[in-house]
Length: 167
Image (cartoon, rainbow, N blue to C red):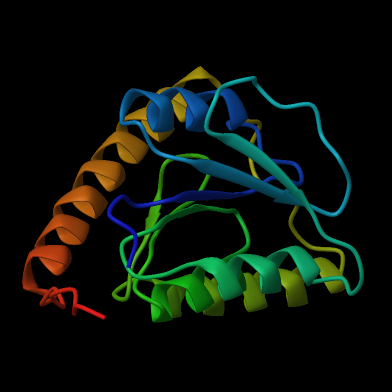
């Protein structure tokens, strides 16, 4: 298992790319932005762009294949959040709301209900993304990264190391 958590960002339509880089860089973590097409990203030594092609959910599938316990995922995609939680990742929405085992079921049910309502012409999209959302995201990501680092350090401390054997 890697010694440091990794930050994965579901980058299509993500409004907090610079903030994700800022927090990851402050902690010396790698951050990978995943999208179906190349995007302009903030430049930093540990920033990587992963372009995936294929099916509609190809970016989601790629993230789920890569993520391990104590990594951090940023996404507004509730089904992706659910899949990442099952692998032990910390998951945040772009407005700073954490997805957890306790709230993901309600989030999935609400998503389904809103989809049905939109199909009948009722309701609309989320409110506009504003400075408070950006601030809340920065705070939540900072907390998630600190928790992930503590969890990863504890997991690595419990993993027995195999002594090298002489040839």
